[in-house]
Image 1 (tube, one colour):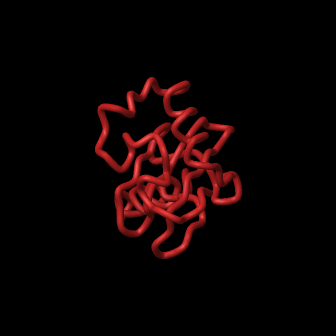
Image 2: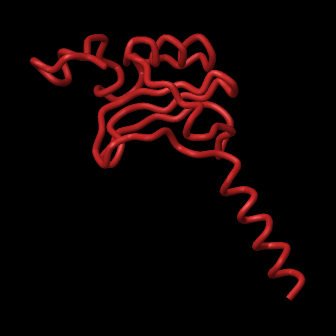
Length: 106
């Protein structure tokens, strides 16, 4: 019984350690959590997405700030040394217009 209680407390504490940013069921968005230098972005609910920073995360939902795709990519390079040209086409493209013609950037 003690081991179950310890596990339950650990599980609850670890689940509360980080929360994903608020987004729609299927949402093309990019976020930064400045306090932990965490980044999450892409097409949530469908993919592809990318996450950078502490895992499982140290940010509450209220700490996440929505940012443009260009800023997300810039911070990933600056903070984590990401080389976007080596990534899949969705992320390696420079211009969001190439991904969603006629759609405005976030």
